[in-house]
Every structure is written in C-alpha cells, then in structure tokens.
Length: 414
Ligand SMILES: Cc1cc2nc3c(=O)[nH]c(=O)nc-3n(C[C@H](O)[C@H](O)[C@H](O)COP(=O)(O)OP(=O)(O)OC[C@H]3O[C@@H](n4cnc5c(N)ncnc54)[C@H](O)[C@@H]3O)c2cc1C
Image (cartoon, rainbow, N blue to C red; front, side):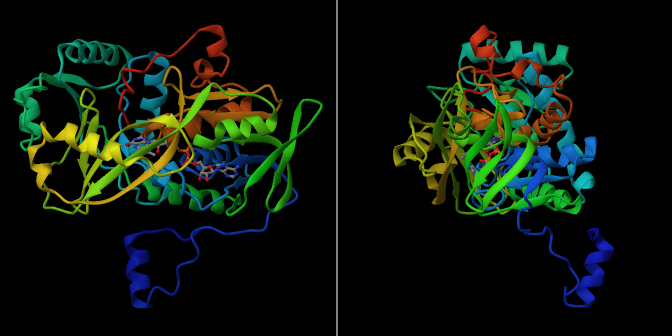
C-alpha cells in the first residue's frame, strides 16, 4: 500500500496523479476462507481489520450485497460520544471514542475526526436529574463529561434560544471530546487497510443462505456462488434478523427507518453538536456549511431506506423553538437508513446457537460512534471465543432478563 503523506501528494501533483494505486482490490471470491464477515459497513470492516491487526487472521472475506459503506455507515449524521449510563456501554463506547482519536494515524487515512464537543440539552427538570446522574456515573467510569449551566450552553452555542416558552434550556450534559468524523472515510480507511493485509472485500455479492453441518457453520450461499468458511460474522445492521433467519434462529430486534436531512450551506455558525432529546431533534454544522439535522425513527417496521415525510416536519418544527434561525433555511436533501433496534437500546455482540457463527448488531440509531470499539471487541470474540467488552452484550441477556437499559442515553440519540 502506498502511504498517504504530504510528500506523496506533492510527488503525485508533479506527475498528474498517475501513480496512485487502487485503494482496495475487487477480487473474485476464493472457495474457502478462515473467516467470512457479512456486511461491509463500518462494523464489518472494523471487525475484519482488528482480526488482522490484533490476531494475525488475514484469510478473511468481507461480503457486501451493495457497495462498501452504502448502508447506515454512509447515511448517518456521524455523532461520536461515549456518555452512556451503564458500565458495559461506557466501556465499549469510550474504547471506541478513544480509538477515533488516533484512527487517521492508525489507518493512514484522514477520517476527519473532529472532537468539537457534544451537548445533550436538558429541557425538562426530569432531564436535568437524568443527565446529572449520567455525569456522576461517567465520572466513576472514567468518561469525561460534565453537567453545564444554561449560561455555559449559551456561551458554547450563541445562536441558541435558551429561554423558549415551552422548552427552556435548563442545562446540558457536555462531552468536550465528543464530536464527528467523516463517515465514508471511516469505511474507506478500514477497507484500504484490510485489502492491504490481503483480505478480500467482495462487493455486489448478496448472502442468500447460511450453510451448516451438524449445528456448525460451514459457509454461505451467495449471488456469486458458495463460499466456505470456518467462522462467520454477521454484521448487517437492519438486516440482522433476516440473516439470523437464514441460519435458523431469531434475534430480539426490530428494523425501522431512521432519517436525516441537511440544509443549504451557510456560513459557520455552530461549532459543537447539539442534541435535544425532549423535542426529539439534533443538529450540527458540516464542514461544507450545511446544517445536519436528525430526529427519531419511523413508528413502524420497514426496509425502505427512505423515511416518511411527516418526520421531517416534526423534527424541524421541534427544533425551531431552540434554533429560531433555522426557520429561514431551505432544506437541501433527505435520506434514510434501516436501523436495528433492541428492547433495551443496547447492541448485541454474541455467539449464536450455530457453532462458529457470531452476530454484531443492534446498534440501532447510534452505532457510528461505536465502529472501532465494536470491531475491536467483535474481533476478540471471534478469535478467542470471549471478550471482556462483549460479555454483557450476549443475545441471551433478553432471556435472562439482564438488560442494559440505555433508553435514556439513546432516546433520540445518535
Ligand atoms: C439517518 C441516520 C442517522 C444516524 N446518525 C448516527 C449518529 O449521528 N451517530 C451514530 O453513532 N450513529 C448514527 N446512526 C447509526 C449508525 O449509522 C449505524 O449504527 C451504523 O452505521 C451501523 O453500521 P453497520 O456497519 O453495523 O451497518 P451498515 O453500515 O448498515 O452495514 C451493513 C451492511 O450489510 C450489508 N448487507 C445486509 N444484508 C446483506 C446480505 N444478505 N449480504 C451481504 N451484505 C448484506 C448492507 O448492504 C450494508 O452495507 C445513524 C443512522 C441513520 C440511518
């Protein structure tokens, strides 16, 4: 792999950029791999990357029915934070946030990590108490957050109206090292590093069946033929239930559309990420100047990757009291993704009833921030059969009643 650097850019500029190699190869699938990962989103690619980097397992294929990063990874609003309430969540999300800090250097690929800070607004007394509790829990977990006053919120976001008649701002949970990153770059950076380690990234190849023998996984049936493997990782977000069904078991989750929209670009006016969970909306400003806006999920299950129109209206209407200036903005485009939501709003990283098959899913509306931590943990689970980061996230926790309740931390929340 050619290293990206300022010198390489200068050299290529002198020869009309003719010397750049392809960032990743597009190989024909081999008959058999040690590990097959289904889904070339961020989580699938990160899993493959850490299998190679941390465990030396490189006879790996990542199989993707569309194009890499074309699922939720390329459709999300890129908020990164780790201010969750429960200990197992704080552990995996903080691991992930810390890996984002050095990801560009690690992958030699600029993922534009921007730790600009994330505020979760408290706009009811109930939220004030909830976020103060989270700040205390985070202090014990070693996650740096603080509960800040309305005046400090106003100082950080001058365009905000903190005196709204219905939802005044009463404070906020502030994580200064939270922020955003460039979503496509995260997928592309991992893909390039995986390809460089000799792994095969096979796009336009749909897995249509999971093959088993005597309760053990042996491979997958795909639109490009049969591919055998010793271990299989299912990392397909909103399509996890469908993949599980192919293997003959059920997952406790629902698939729903989540959507986002962006405005026309305007001059820089907000350099932090703001989430308003009571009114159910959140906003940040992209490097191009667009206001990136998101809200809640559709109220019914579906696989459309669109999202319904009334949600746009609801989200924008909700945000206008707190950000009156957005009432003058034109909205440019809107899109949706299919997210995989569990009952306790926490992910599933698990062995399955099929020996050798593992699932990494249930990240729902907030898994972009978790990509490196999830990949790290899933790789450990697949290589060693256990990982301290995944122990509590087994699919069996629903049967045992050991929920990891993050419905407050993940209310709107991304
Ligand atoms: C609008 C929106 C906003 C969001 N905002 C945020 C945010 O601000 N912060 C945050 O942390 N998270 C956010 N999320 C959630 C985040 O995007 C996801 O949790 C995360 O991207 C999931 O990554 P993944 O790799 O698991 O899934 P994906 O990126 O969806 O990848 C799964 C891949 O599997 C492939 N696949 C499915 N079935 C098959 C099959 N049978 N064969 C082969 N391939 C298959 C799909 O084509 C897809 O590419 C948001 C999501 C949406 C939709």
